[in-house]
Image (cartoon, rainbow, N blue to C red):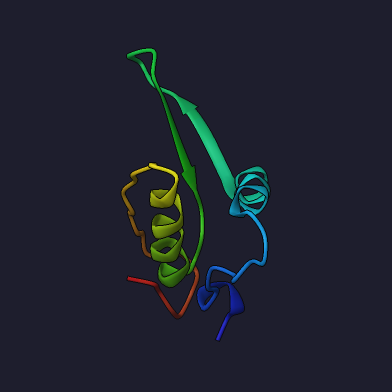
Length: 79
């Protein structure tokens, strides 16, 4: 299988925040909303990774929602 679809959150020997910053810089996005607020997100092809990421973020008091979309041009889908 495509390795981006089976990715899991790594077991880190140090603080998660350094990894989270790099993850946001590489696979994250920030968007301005019409009500003067912002939305942020992380893109990943792995449901397992996203669910594990939610648990890590919760350690820091950050709650989030996961949304999944079907892949275009792919035989497999995380749906």
